[in-house]
Image 1 (tube, one colour):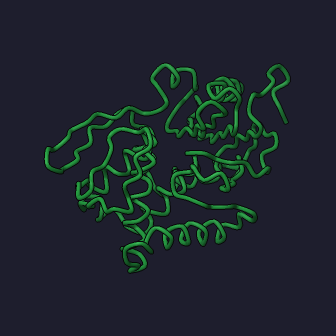
Image 2 (cartoon, rainbow, N blue to C red; image 1 turned 30 degrees about the vertical axis):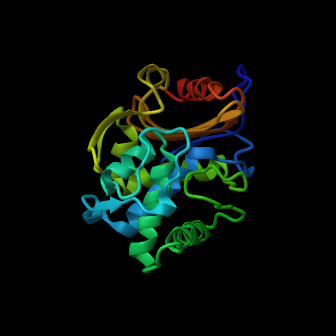
Length: 261
C-alpha cells in the first residue's frame, strides 16, 4: 500500500505499529543496501553481548581499528574511549570508526578472539542473530554499513527498531538524544560534542519522533529508520530505504507519519 498523493523517493518503505498494524508498505521485503541504518543491528548485538555493566569500560584503539574516513573525531593509536561513548558516536554522528571499534571489542569479550580475529567474530555474531530471527537472505558484510554487499529490508529494520523499544530502552534513549559530549584520551585529551544526524528541524517534521537513525551514501541515496509515538500513545516504526536524493527520505517519512496520527 502506498500514499495515494505522494510518490515516494525511496525504493523501499514500511511503517508498522508495535501491535503489527501495517500503515504503509511498498517494496518492504526487497533486499537493499542499508548504509548506516545497519548500525542499529551492530548496536543491538554489541549491547546484548557486552551488557550494561560494560558501558563504563575504557577501550584502547588498536591498529586494526584506525578507520579514519571523514567522521570527526579521528582516533589515534592507543587512544581510550568508553564503551558508552562509542555507542553515542555510532548512534548520533554515525561514526564508522566507532562502529568498528565497538564491534571488535564486543567480539573480543564475547568470543575470546584475539587481535585480527575479533572483528570478524563479531560479524559472525551479527549473522547468527539475524538467522535466529529468520531474516533469510540478509547479508552482513561490515559493522558500519559501508560494504556494498550488505543487504537488509525495510520490514526488518522496522522490526528491529520495535525490538529496541521493547527490550533495550537505554539504547533507544541514545538513538533519541540530540547531542553528546564524548571524551577521548590520548596525548592530549579531547572533549567533543557530537550532534545527531537527524537535526532538530528534521525531527519537527517527523510527527511524534522518539528515536531514529540515518544512513547515507554521499551523492547517491539516503535511508532513515524512525520510531515515533502517535497522539494516542501507540508506537510506530517506519523505514525509508534508498531515497534519491538522500534528503528526500525525510519528506517520505514525514508523509507517512502525518497520515498515521
